[in-house]
Length: 499
Ligand code: AMP
Ligand code: MG
Image (tube, rainbow, N blue to C red; front, side, top):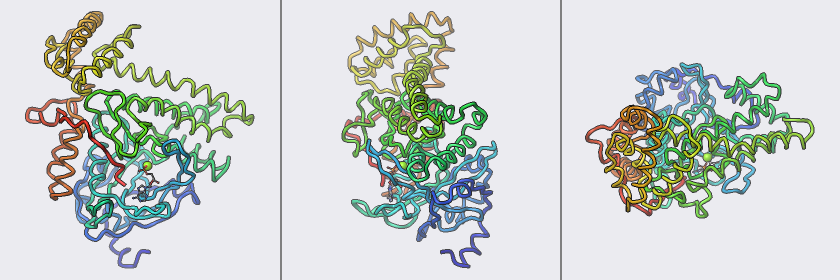
């Protein structure tokens, strides 16, 4: 409970113009909850550009008052902290109630582009959904989510954003005691497939319709007037998720926990836990310590996509048509298109990566051949595509060096050059277009680890800040940043959920 002194302090905080539609609309499907006080919060990073985009005052927030807000110690006027309820399939098994066990939705704001955005604290203490967990987050995973999420945004993929990272001054107990942190996360919304699963199970048809109407108004307003808006809604979400997963595949990203509670209705990447970018190309790559069966391995992501969407479809059956069989048939029709929609996004992405602007029937085969040669040659995924632009300019030595044995690659390059000739473009134009889509800097695992170790073990935030700055310009090569562009050999890299 807040005291009178708290309230006096709260009224002096920087102003945030909240407008909390979720709290207004879904009473009974969330629990109002306060954050646990952090003993001595310090604001390690504030995202000034994002604050401005949200219509907030970054200078006022980059302060002790900001540290208070972003640790959950102070509740700004208009915030209505709540833990959202959701369910989900985790590694294929249904869990009827998950919910925000270590997160609180502070509220929503309308940003300067008139988009409604959620502001959420992650790691701010237990909620009624904590299920035995402590509701806390160690600082390392907080900073990791900040780096990888902001890196993802700079790479041009839809994602939740990081507004602030705070060290709480408190220890969090995992295998060893670790410094605690809170991430302030911003998202188009936190509606997940798992939110629909929870509403379908607990609220019946009426509630699932309310939720679908809310999601349509918030994310897909254009379809509200369609003949069958709920079917169009399903199509729109399927399309957004297909585009997202193809974006991950094009960039070499492995989410790591594609449970239905981590797949958003908006199509943004959500929940940076054990995720990581692949170095050496291998479709079987898994980093997560808990993903023993490789369910969420790199190459399995497009397979899990329709699986998750099928779980989503199941919740919408009562809305599509009064006759259940007809509903199922219509939803199935959309589901059957998901694979081809995914492939079409993916191939379009791969074409631009290898410098093609036109389409030829053999392109798919050529891309798959390159991937096969990369796997066989144990080549670095990101660098192959980046250095291919130098080959477009005429010199393929640098890209060739990435392959353990380059014979098969040389054959491929000859084929690719012939194909480029058909494009009839100046080589420099092609090369520059490739450099605009193939990053030189991704969140390299060794650089992420280095930044986290410095921050967590040595209270040195500078490597984090430097890496964040590098990741904000992933496509422009900068002299002096060579170490950020290359992998370190570490075949045993393992990531953890951060819980
Ligand atoms: P995740 O795997 O991060 O998507 O989390 C799955 C579920 O576990 C969600 O309901 C989280 O809120 C909950 N959870 C994860 N870590 C914790 C924690 N430290 N304390 C309480 N709940 C947690
Ligand atoms: Mg989650």
